[in-house]
Length: 315
Ligand code: GDP
Ligand code: ZN
Image (tube, rainbow, N blue to C red; front, side):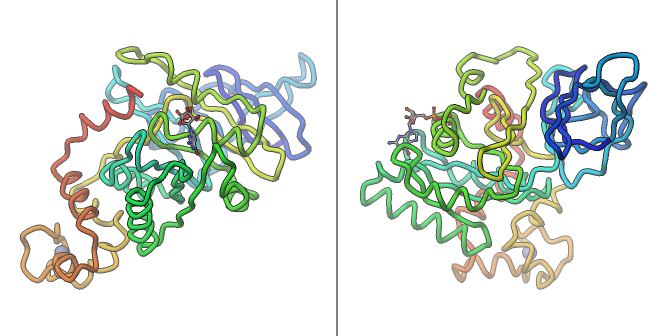
């Protein structure tokens, strides 16, 4: 049988088949996935093949095969530095919640998030929340950000989770897909999910309220079916993905507007800093690339990664 992993506790996996039957599965024997050194071989969102455990009841199974993933996100273990934990797999779209104020979301945070999502191969939609609270200045800032990001290919939505504005458009984006919601604590993730599906109590809030600081807490994601044709993966206490390990030369590949110009730079390993005849620098000077994007790029190159990880994981 084939099914989708909805929940994992580390030893048991809740698997749902297409006819909506639910099975509790264990992994058969030793199970390693090539190329990934992780504490968990199977994650929420994985498609697996399993067989029923004949000796017990009809809802217990053993997973023997995992299907290829289209993408997955990992979290580096804080203590065991070489180990990673796969948070979720096969994510169709991530909605990054942004608020101009309360809390402010910086372009630096947005850009780091987007770079990582690009590196993971995950589509991101920017969701500006709390638009009911924006004054004229905040509206201007929001429109400016929307302009920057839609110009380079990211879809932007304006919503108010509290007032129910823009929810229909968001639902439309979620149809037939597996979605995740990210963003700083306090941007309105729980409120938004509640607006989409009342009575669905996600962990996002409860866990981030507790301090996970300094603890080696393994957080498990969980997938939910919504009442319209959509699935959500809930990842407690995670507001970003961290920065994937990447080479300096690779970073600009994940800035779509830089990547487009790359072939026009004189040097094919151009870092777009001090090199002569750099198409990215030229576009920047002609205001075809946003300075905020370029500054974020430089910050990532300088690599204050550690600080960033702390920021994300001690939500
Ligand atoms: P989370 O930490 O991302 O899950 O954020 P919450 O959903 O808990 O929201 C944080 C606070 O912002 C709560 O007090 C919400 O009532 C408030 N909030 C969320 N969305 C909106 C919105 O669209 N408009 C307004 N005015 N407040 C909102
Ligand atoms: Zn260049």
